[in-house]
Length: 375
Image (cartoon, rainbow, N blue to C red; front, side, top):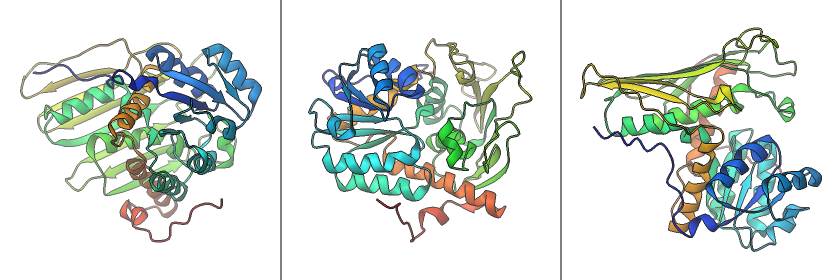
């Protein structure tokens, strides 16, 4: 058996990693995750901007970024900025992309944060704009680059597990909900489950339908439609992929965090793989795990180990993929068109919640009345 499981995205080839990155946003995900990962990889972050310039200056000092821009227009005028790395709330990304495609004469690509938008309609408009202006768009669906998920994808691609029969993810963990989420009513499915749904698509392809059952989270005080989410993706070949996204995880307090975890398991006709995601332990470095068995080696369980972690190490992957795609004139793996598949499943999930029925993904993708937000 080949046990090179391709845990990490290949680094950009010589010269490709020199693309000048313009960071938009200076919150936690940019400051402590994106920029830390890029510094470790040696990527060229040429400048940063935020709606609060003083915070951008603090982050620039922390991460040794040479320039702080007062406005997006100022950043786009700088020929040193070739890639935009956008990490702002999803309701703000469409307007940034509108401005970028119109005025970013030096741009070669965009990496947008997930979720790409609050709804499928706005996500489709972002994709349309980038396609119309021939600007490569990648979406930072970073769980695909978690080391255990990449290794699992390799196992599936090589047929070590045979045809998948059942795949599950069980999450018992409390996310930090950012204040801007209070405006959406859409909570867990859009902002947490999107990791799991996108990973299911990455591993197994496009589902036919989704059924979602959700209740409000007792801990979350602001208005929201979906707190604890349980959902099933149905595939044409009989595969079922299901997740329990429990953001309550018990009555946590200062003395007891109730043992948070994320576990996954894939059962196939020829083998079984299971593992954990290390994210609930952040900021402690806790590598994700994998163990598997296959009929090619009956009675043997194989348990590789590694030192890399999802946060922040795996965040090198989406940017490396975009850089390689720009240099080779190809589409990044997490390109905008692909991400519309994830956004369609999310949109179908909210419809399923409202109507208490399975919803075919085609009901969203084939809708003829897709109207973008007002400019």
